[in-house]
Length: 348
Image 1 (cartoon, helix red, strand yellow):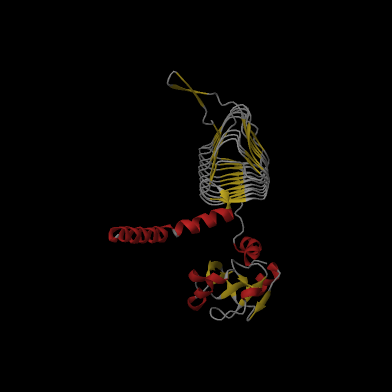
Image 2 (spheres, one colour; image 1 turned 135 degrees about the vertical axis):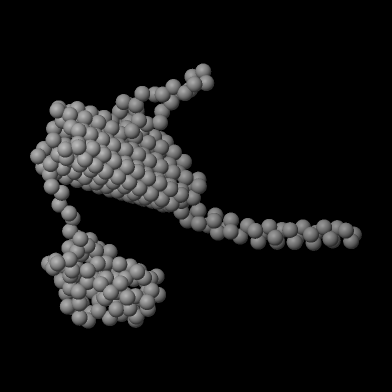
């Protein structure tokens, strides 16, 4: 299907289950947003809000939904699909196939004699693999990664450079961990005695289940005496912090800078917007939605959507914000009324 780093519109339509408007032999070499598309780009239009950019679009063709395919302006040659974003899942790998990494151990890597490293694994420069570590088939360990003693990494997992996996942590199969992330870090637990903070030993586990993706510079604490668990298929954006003993349900999504304090548990399919913060020991029901920058201080029922600080039902929060925006005008009206009352009082 792929021909020397390019695709025709016809090839793209066939692969994505769509159709061509115009010339199916038009060739493109990359993808781009409508506003930033050059002559060799297939421009993406999936949302009507960006239709205003069509007039200045310089792409050679358009990848567009059925709903928007008849919009005027922009390239006349188009690949029309039901869902352009879903089509990208098929088309991007055709144009940008994943680079294969040759298995083997880089000469600058350090591997303990007791570690179990299959021949299909690829270990990058300056990686350190400690005693009794077990790697599955096809694991990729990037430059400068550190995997401490007794940790295990499942088959097909990729650790990008500078990832640290602490002692005893368990990472499942087909997990992707981006640069700078730390897995199994000591949780933040102290007891104050006589004015001094004494650290509670953090001796629990940290488990990343299969098919999880973790963004760059995340921190996932180990349990204090229990386990921290990131459920199967969950996706964590960059700069997410998961406290000790937290359990994130399967197929959940946590957007950038989310912080979840210790011992909170979530059900399956929970979504947390950017910079949401959850206090400890909460229960978040399956399918719950937590808005960006929400401050969650109480349990959230399954399927409920909350936002604001403190977080509350989303509709209630929007109504409260609407009233708050009216507050300055209300105060001006109160001031006027007070002046009128005062003036009438002076004339009596």
